[in-house]
Length: 277
Ligand SMILES: [Zn+2]
Image 1 (cartoon, rainbow, N blue to C red):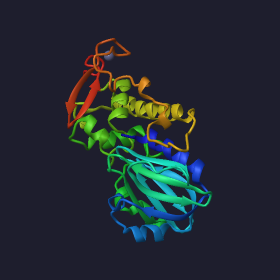
Image 2: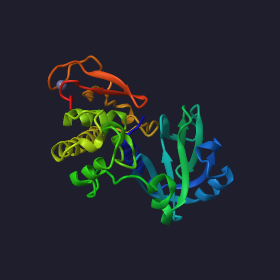
Image 3: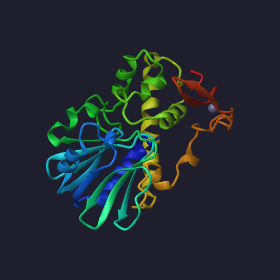
Image 4: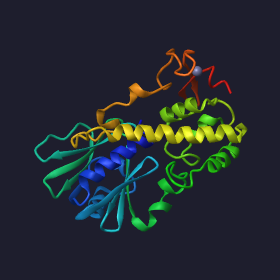
């Protein structure tokens, strides 16, 4: 499932590929992709709009349009954009098509059917349901060690659950939360409010480091316009994970085998020695 770095890379790729392109027509093939709109409204709201820039908020991709609207897209598990020539066959599970003024189609397909799209007025963007409760962006000036400390101090849940809650900390999912907690050598299962200033500062630094490093890695990869997927354009980051999906492999710090525990319904990977507390 794409987390902040992957969504950031998809947004950057779309920005490079479709900025200044006009949407000649749009087609919503699977109504539940955009439950706030009928296919007719969806098409009418996008017709003849030009993409002015593409950005990101949390794990949402924001296509800003010159008609004072924004198309919000969430990839969820398997959503994928592809920029295809008209003659190329549509992928299986195509849920929306945007016909562009350069004889290409921007296609959104989604094998798992969890993706989401919504068109809002630009003026209402940050008060719309999907975005209004999101925590500050990790790369924003608001995300300071003191901010993270206050967020954790107010949480009665475990550190891991708190980090995954997008209204507390935005952009981390199961992978980067595990990586950051390992680098910071903090215990995922400890109650968030129990962390003192020193450990919070270490965690804050680790969160920024893992996110920066993975975005930097993805930025070196070539974008395939015909497969702008949420997995580093197929370039793969998996080989760089320290704990995620590394059960029984040696910890990079102490060589203790990495453990996996199912917690709050998902796997948590950690070093039982470095992350004891
Ligand atoms: Zn270790």
